[in-house]
Length: 139
Image 1 (cartoon, rainbow, N blue to C red):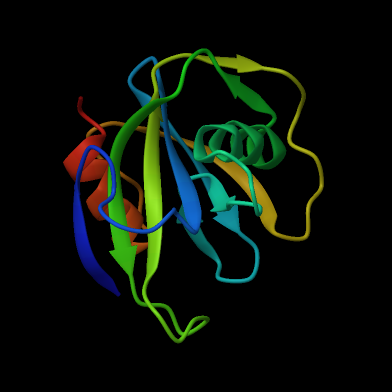
Image 2 (cartoon, rainbow, N blue to C red):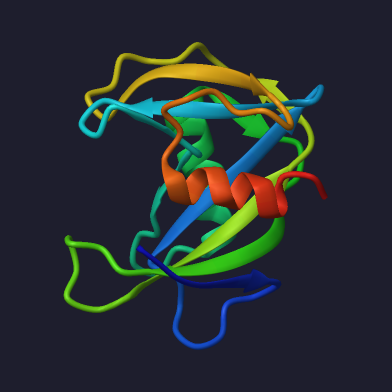
């Protein structure tokens, strides 16, 4: 459940996770989460001591095989998750240029990659990620 969101840096504590809005040629890159069977923005947990920007670049490459030309902070969100007794904070990064480094590797977490044309998104996108794309995807 989305509790709050905004542009710029998140107020308060260090982020727990990062997400990447990867837009290229009017399309956005999404991943299909194998466990939840939904399309999502690439992203994941920030490792202890890892800078959020590095976490975003790492997660994008791990999940999609693409590297960002440049990542810029786009916003933040605070969510309530059944996986945590306290609210989690995430940072949203945007990129407008991708370089394919390798193909999508078989991964138990990420089933497949999907390119969707903006502004329309396909069915099956997680509600929070669809909202984030609507709010931040047209920078």
